Length: 97
Image 1 (tube, rainbow, N blue to C red):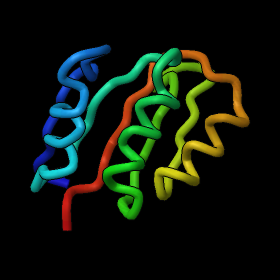
Image 2: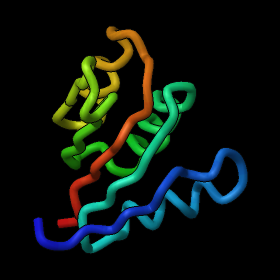
Image 3: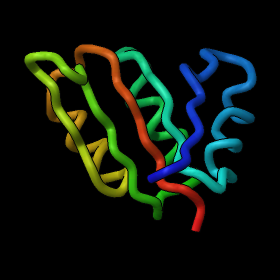
C-alpha cells in the first residue's frame, strides 16, 4: 500500500455517520483509532455500511499483548467479543473496489 488516509478517532456523538461515510467512499485504505469502550459499537456501525470489505483490527500495537484480527467485519467482531477488550485499537479498512 503506497497511499492511505488517516482519520484519527471517530467522533463520539454527532457527525459519526459522516465520518463512516467518508471511510465507505474512500478511494484509498482508511486507518483510524478507537478506544476499547467503543470498538464493538464502531465495528457494528461500519458493518452496516460495508460488510463485504476486509478489515484489519490491531490491539496494543508494539506492546506485549499485541493482537491482530483480520477478515470480514462480522468475523472480526465475533473474535474481538470473545477476547478481553483492553487497550487502544487501530482499524484499517480496505478501499472501495
